[in-house]
Image (cartoon, rainbow, N blue to C red):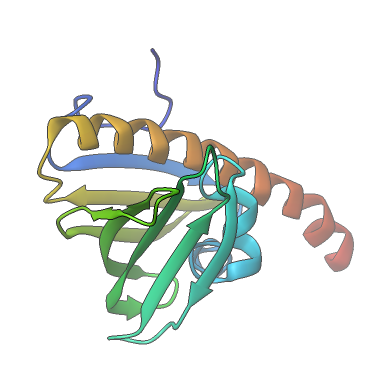
Length: 166
């Protein structure tokens, strides 16, 4: 399997994903923090709802569409916020079964760095402290796919932005 954005060895800790996107650092930061953007690119189009309390200590929750009687929920807290520059948050995965039983992963950490470059923004995401190799393998593929969807979202913004400035 080929990963376009994964820069660390598949399954390694930390997971490092990088990409350059055709938008300003402020716009890419918004895509990481605005619920209306998140549902368009995060989670392989299965994200049902994104809730964001964008402040240090504020929480975030991503709820995925129910599948086969199970529901996946990602959640955490914002630890550092510098719009257009850095976003750091904790990460936990909670799986609920149809019977109501749940299992929650240990807490890991995600740090996202936004750097202005010619024609866009370079994003470096470091997801660390993921305890199990199987979780790291899944997360590697997930972030890689998400970055592809993020690129498509931001590319679709580009014609509208160019038309507005013309």
